[in-house]
Image (cartoon, helix red, strand yellow):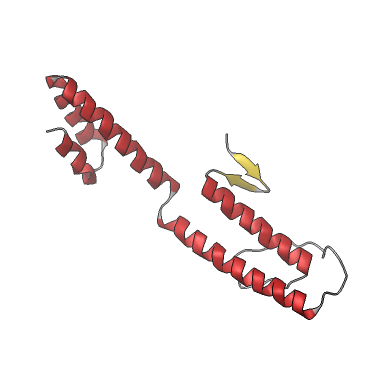
Length: 136
């Protein structure tokens, strides 16, 4: 069962890290009263500041520097995530497991090879030729 974190539905540990870092970013903006960069695609919920105490300039600058660094990290992680989707990773793992089972099945009998070939030709992508090579 997927976990709920804030308003985000968490599916993978990677998504949990991204959601947590976004939450940290939003909290930093609220705690340090750092102005959020409106050009960023990460809108923060509109809430009043947590305090009205004016912070020293060096504290605000440290908060801004930390926010910039956090935004850079989030950009890098989001870029990594878009390169390979969870479904691609799951598909790849499934093909690897299926390949192992079909090779084992093919080795168990003469008809096993034919059945395995049929399953590969019918249900596997054409780029999975290495699977059918292992059955010969």
